[in-house]
Image (cartoon, rainbow, N blue to C red):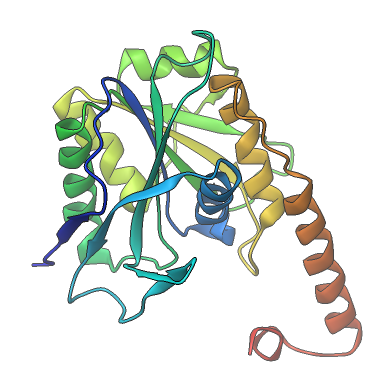
Length: 244
């Protein structure tokens, strides 16, 4: 069984925080979006998760080595608009958990959220392009989570599969009566997709209107990646050499 150790860097307490979780998925959309959100809001690292079963690397930020999974947080500065909460916690990582790690990781996160008074969890996910006309859609674990989708114009997904840690958190949310909402965006599977990550910011901006996030750098990065791919294809290169 995977062993997790949660280390606290700061002992902070909020009455009603909201959690946003972004792990690697299709196009790395969730991870890119969560990391971008944490940087743009200048959130502080408050905790991290380490395990001997995780890939052996440290993420170095501002000269500080951190574990693969990090928790960033900060208080909200709003006029009681958007989703009810007094602070924002962003959880992110760059590695894809192994199949056997998804369930214990999801449970560990939900238990940590409960201990820290989190009422609402928003999971950011990239999914394959199965419908070019499809926009952002979502799945909720409770009626309250579905109400959030209705209020902030996230189309409800009726029949599909949500994979990974987000999928486990959804059905665990049903069993625990926790408000878990997965926001899904179609993304490219052949390369990192900053464009899809930027689109994930759109519903977040409606839910948390004080988040004045400039997504232009993500769209610019997407254009540069697409140009590199086109140039590489025209030169007769292959995907492996592009990434290697």
